[in-house]
Image 1 (tube, helix red, strand yellow):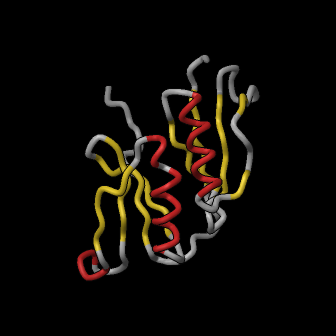
Image 2 (tube, rainbow, N blue to C red):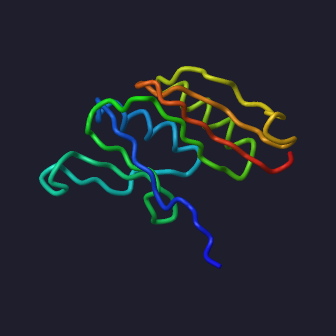
Length: 132
């Protein structure tokens, strides 16, 4: 049986430069870096930028305009310290608090997450499911 998972996801943004600056800083503590960029002249439509780990871009920004409704994207991490570091970096990069790091028992007893609104209002989360 094949396990189905999401291979990558794209988020449309109004201000590509601002989004790249925010995500470059916010995702750095969890190991994500800017891995690929393609201008509209290559894609045929809009500029895109791909962030990822271990040689694979999983998260893409597309300069196609502000996306509505706003969306929620959760990045899974290995440790609670990574959740804390993501939150601090995202706030420092211009994000807005939408739930500080902590246990969310309503999901399960070891669900440790932090939520930040990016500059365009998308709810970005880092989550660790492992016990402390």
